[in-house]
Amino acid sequence: MTLGHYPPARIVLQAHADHLSRQVPSVNRYVNTAVIADHLTQKPPERLSCTAEDRNRILQQYLATLNRDDWSETVRADLDPSTDYFTWFTANVAARLPLRAFPDANADD
Image (cartoon, rainbow, N blue to C red; front, side, top):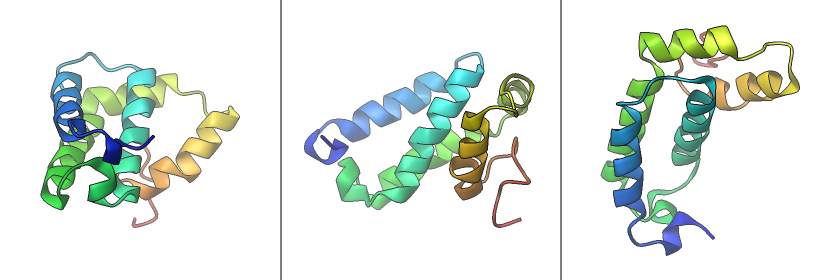
């Protein structure tokens, strides 16, 4: 099932991004949010039941939360760099997104 078959997907994503921006950062919240943001960048908007403008606005809201100082500091402090997950995350998700917490992973830098 994709979000494209879920008509209120845009509303749910927007509500999640709004709610998340008010949450205390944690490593689990960070990586889950980054995976969602990465998914938003990888899929055409219609596969997410939203317009390009809606998708871009929601994506920017997720990235704004991820790039806050407190969120960046939390993930750097709590995500164990010796794990396979860290290796996968930085080589894939962090490499595709402009994440302040992982500047060395960003292919555009």
